[in-house]
Length: 238
Image (cartoon, rainbow, N blue to C red; front, side, top):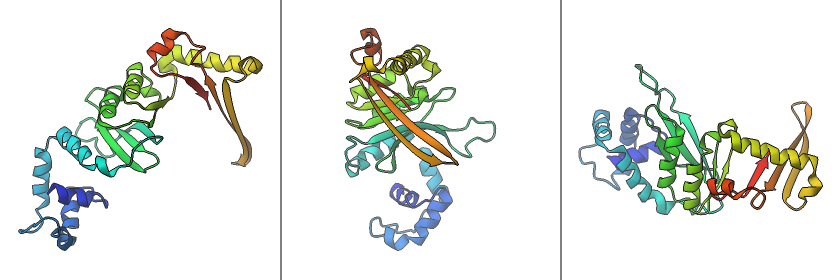
């Protein structure tokens, strides 16, 4: 039944009824792999099986099963982001919050972690990182994930990170602003320590200039800061 459900979900079945209808339409094909001597189970039976599953254990088994099918993530960008599941808020219950890891180059979700009740993404991201083989990957997370314990997890997994910095990390944000303020005032003093890219184009009825500056701070910042933020080497301004 799990095999039938997985096969149905891949082409878009998103409910127990849809799984049953898909399986009935594909019964001859499914019987190449599983007997289904009594036909396709009803949607209620699928529901009882799903309810009986240990979700975490099933996820771990499923990821071990599909891992050999996925290419190595070396140099791939893995974007971690939180979303609210549409339509999951009903009868006064809290909407389901999921944190997902999306393989940008592969175009697939590599893993998901549900946040605990009355919690947020900060607690779910480390658990999701533990479930993935990230060696060599570049992990991107928004400002919510800009936490020292998360950077340590990523570095321990032998991966790299790009994190957004906002005022939830006010001291770090202040240091970053200071770096680029000094660079704007005295660029000649920082020659050889930064890279800059610009492109100019016309869009939305105006001239747009896009600029990215990356500043090496690995030798300039105090050791107490780089010790807290594992693997920190540079800061970037867009």
